[in-house]
Each structure stands twice: as structure tokens, then as C-alpha cells.
Length: 94
Length: 212
Image 1 (cartoon, rainbow over the protein chains, first blue to last red):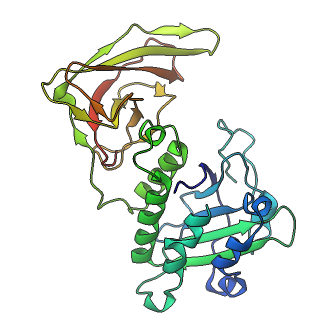
Image 2: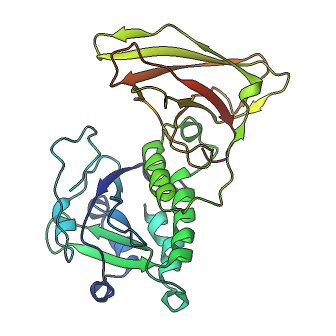
Image 3: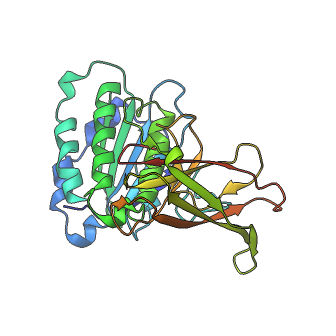
């Protein structure tokens, strides 16, 4: 079964801490979203190992739907900005 | 996306007690058009991060029989970005590289021309299977432009599994999974950031389901 087409974005944000994990929704709860809500789902992968912070995080959204920056900004420590000089419509950086 | 979130990732995040190292990779999932947003935060140690990465790559690839995916059309952007990310943090070291089939192909470059509508230099490249054997796709042309300032603008990604890494490659559309002896493929290369006089590159042809 094919998943929806995805595209990626590059973003940066304050790193996660273990304390921030306490307020998690469960991953399964996303599966109960309506179709319209589910199309707003965005994933972010962030490197946390040595030399962290040098590599922009990667965000993945359902194709045709841009990342809702307000959602990422609502995360603890999340400060997102769109790079005004971006060359690709799907490329964002702080 | 539902199968993506409900499958392997769910099982991976349910094993926090098995954490064997420091946080290596953070996963955030958000949803919603307005506050309050639904959010999920989780961190993985290096071993689990590798498992997650393998799972994501598989999910992005989706059905390997899908000709659109083989041609690099579907999810290619996401795959390329994910590959670059994984390559940068060393999560793709144990993958199988695609097979170098350069000796089985002739690569013919057309003349360099300037596309005034698109404001870019272009060149048609033809790959012909000159071996007596069929070659299984997908077939990619690795374009090494390290000697000049020009860049390949329509690359599907950059090499990581194939050494040296960081070279642009383009995966060619194929009418069938197999390219028979004598058959040829053609693709258009777009170049940017160049005045045209220093567009120099070497090529390598790789094939098969392995990583680029």
C-alpha cells in the first residue's frame, strides 16, 4: 500500500529535552484524525548526536500541504522562520 | 501516511526501556490547522534511530514495482532529502550500493545549449547499453561536476552509498524494468550557476535497486 506522496522541508528548532516528552499525545491518536486533519500532519526529524545544531532538521508533510509553522512554533522552544532567500519552494531554514 | 505512522514507527517508540545510548535523533509529529495542535515528541538512541531510518526509507520507497517510483518521480524529493540527512549523520553506512555498470554503457553528450525561456544551460545525454546483457533498472547517471562551478539543477539526489559521496545523480525514466542490449535511454541535464564556459563533468552509470 502506497503512502501519500511526501515532500520535505529543512527547518531548525530548539532541541527536544526529555522533559518535553512528558506532554506527548500518543502516536496512535494521530490515526484517529479526520481526513482533513490528517492532511495537516507533519513530521520532523532532528539530529541530536555530537555536533548537534549544525544540521537542519528535516520535516515531512503530505504532498500539497506546506508545513504549518504555527504548529511547530507551538512546540516548546520552537522558533521557526522562513528563509526569505529560499530557492526551492519546499526549503525552509531559520 | 496512516500506515506510515501506524506501522513500524509505533512499534519503535513503544520500546523506551531498551534505550542503550544517549539521544541521537528526535522525532516530532504535529497536526492541526490551529491551536491547540496535536503533537508527539520522541527521541531515539543511535541504534533505534537507525531502525527508524531504515523503516522510513522503506516507507518512502513504497511499492518498488511502481514504475513511477523507479523512475524517480514519486517521493524522489523526500527520498533524496532523507538520504542526504541520513548520510550526514552516518545512518546509511550499512546499505547496499547500486551496481557500477559504467563499462556496460556508452554515454553520449549532446551539445550544450542555452534555454532562453528557462535561463539555463541544457545538454541531452544518451545512455546506450552496449553490453550483450540486459540491465535491470532503475538506472542512474552520476554527474561529477567537482572540477567546475556549475551545478546539476535537476538532480534526483546526491551520492552517499556510492563513493565518493556528494555527487549529483539523475535517475532516468525507463519504459520497462529491464533495459535490453542495444537499447538506449535519453535524459536532459540542466545546469545552473554557470556562464556556460566551465560546464565540465564526468559520468558514471549505476543500476539496480541499491542505494546511490
